Image: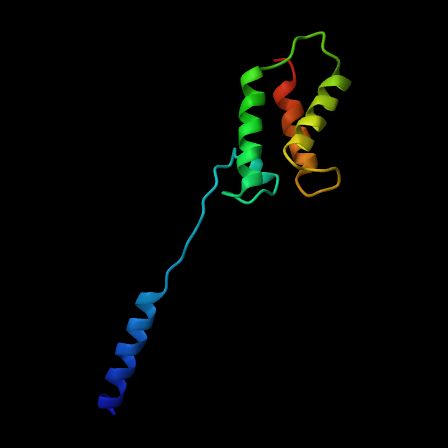
Length: 103
């Protein structure tokens, strides 16, 4: 009985050693990943580049109208490749709007 059990345990241990797990961790402030873009994809990289460029421009001046800030936020999200009613679009608009609001 033991002679049968030992080879079975050796095979089970060998197969268990072959199992691997791959995890991708995304920072909680990674807007593009939260919009639904797959990390590492071309669309994700384009989103990251455009978001970085938008952040470099900074916040808008105080007399800038809220409706214009909202329109700019929508336009930026569309430039990321998101469309209205698509998963992540509303989150994108909220984040872009908040980033453009005067401090």
